[in-house]
Length: 242
Image 1 (tube, one colour):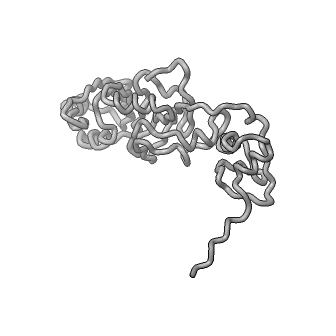
Image 2 (tube, rainbow, N blue to C red):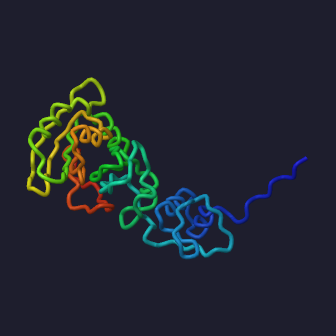
Image 3 (tube, rainbow, N blue to C red):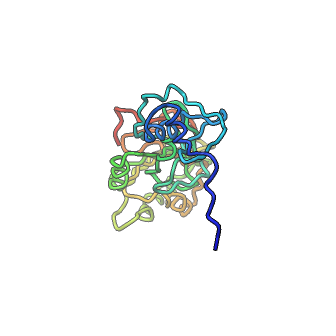
């Protein structure tokens, strides 16, 4: 007959905070997930963590604060692939208005292959997630491409003729291609696309013998990346709509 399992030492952090603040367990969990609780001087955002004799401190700034869902725009660097629904955790650090609770629950609503960089959207609101998912084929995506050398017009025409290769289904993608700048050293192209599969962009370019030095999404619908640097983020403004 096996011996009964011993209870883990200490008590749940949420219970300790509730006792310290004379508040409900739900309020204690909100304080912890919001990043306003420290254990031995280090932020602890897991209400289920067990503590015994550690020093637990609650930041008074969190008292009365409300955690509201956010939509975050991240400048994804090249080399990181993003899948639909992928969490933001591990990609950015919480700071300011972006609390640990947000980082834990924000999900990617704009998949992008590793070879690309630029605007990526992470949303908590089911409405925003649904909008970007259901209207994915209707939203216009603006991409900027940096190509080495002066790209001849024939190669650009080949791209337009092979636009069907970008289609995720039977619908022919919309493509508007224009040369932003051209020199002997570099050609910069602007692509405006609808009804396409972002993961097919690199292979579509490769089939036209074009290897971009940079392939960056600058805009999604009516929302632009702005001056956000690679690896940095900003919150969607109240006036912005996709």
